[in-house]
Every structure is written in C-alpha cells, then in structure tokens.
Amino acid sequence: MYYPKKRLIALSVVAILNSGLICAQEAHWSYGEQDKWGEIINELYSPPYPYADCGNGQKQSPVNIEPEKITAAKNFDSIEPEYGEIPLSVLNNGHTIRVNTTQGTLNIGKSVYELAQFHFHAPSEHLINGIRYPMEIHFVNGRSDGRAAVLGVFIKVGKANPVFQAILDNVPTAIGELKEASQSIRPEQLLPAHQEEFYSYAGSLTTPPCSEGVQWFVFKDAIEASDQQIKEFTDKYFRDNARSEQKLNGRKLDFMDQ
Image (cartoon, rainbow, N blue to C red):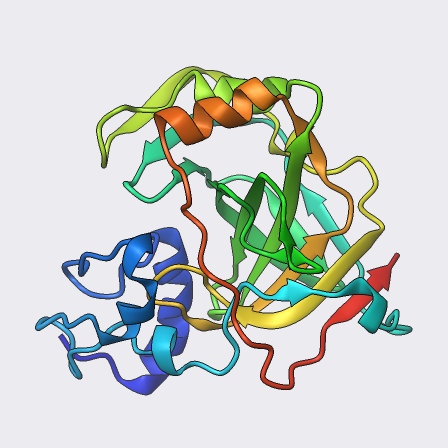
C-alpha cells in the first residue's frame, strides 16, 4: 500500500490514534530490539520500511533533559489541558496500557488539539540529568491537519493515586483486548497540580513508526503513585517498555514558566 508524501503528513494523527498503525497490517516490534526498529520490513508498505524514521530520524524522542543547561523561554504559547470526565476504556495493546477517549482538549495558544489517548511507560522515557523516574504518562493530542502534541508526566513514588488504581483495576489480561468499564475517570487528576513549569522541544512518537513533527511538553513536577501501584504495573503488565535516549542533534530544548 503506497501513501504519497502529502498523505503521510495527515496520517501522523492516524498513527497516533492507532498506536503505530500506518498500513493495513502492523509489523511486529519489541522493546528488546529497538536498534532494529528502522529495519523492520512490511511488504504491504512501499517502500517496505514503515518505521524508517526510528533509525534515520534526526528529531527523535525521548531525550535527556538537563535543566541547568536550559534557559527559560521569554515568549511562548501557553498550554491549557482540559481533560474532564470520560468513560473508562482501557486497552492492553501488548506494549502498554492505553486509555482511549474522544473527549478532552489541549489548548496551545490559539490552537486546539483533541486528546486521543494516554498511556504509561515504566520506567520513564524522558530523563532528567540522566536519571529516569519510575514511570511516565503520555497524553497524546492531535489535530485534523496532522499536527500532534504530547504531554509528558513523570510518576514518582508517594501516595496512592485513585485514578491510576481505577485504570489498573480494569486492565484486560489478553493482548489486544479492550475493556469498557462501568465507571468514569478524570484524566486531569493524572496531571501535576502545578502546571506552570514545563520543558518543550520538537520530537517524535517514541514507538514505531517514530513519526516526527510532534511537539513535546514535559512537566517539571511529577505526580505520585504508591510503590505498590507501580509494582502492580511492572509485575503484572509491563516492565521496561521505554525507548532508549535519543540524541538532540542540535535541537533547542526550552524551559517555560507560565
């Protein structure tokens, strides 16, 4: 199946919504073979390397954030997530636990992005001075024009998080299974209380197809989850589902204080 270059731009949001699907049949990949993601072949795609950006891309994510080397930006668009109550819909896609939704928006300046899904990584994918947090949440937002923005939220050990627990209590055990729970949650309760400070840079999806053109916003403050909750995620579901650090390749990393 061949997609002209112009269509590939629009398909970036489709890739987000479908967790990496950019062709009729997704090629298999694993976190244990990250260095070979770009070499994966899918005969239904022309050219047959649907994940080439994973190996050749120059603006890949995640990255190591070194706060002491970053100067605060003076002019930037404010961000305002509006993630209200949603029905709880949980997917085990074999790589992570993902909560799907068609509700919620992220306002970046005058631009409005729709929340498509959020999912979890253990340990965190982004690093702070070379150190990873126990977990990280990615809130994936997209627009019809193909633009994408992702909020990164670190999770540290602390008090139990009731929203995280509601998700854990409804995780399907079978890969590919979607569970529609009878309850609702508020994704905004998985965001830090203080959202004024965050890091931002131009990057990519952190899983195949590793599409670039994604604007990242990584909050400085972390949220808390109990040690038991984090162990439940890593022991029962996913451990080491984090991509390795990617080079900045001259990209600017901004610190913003709203």
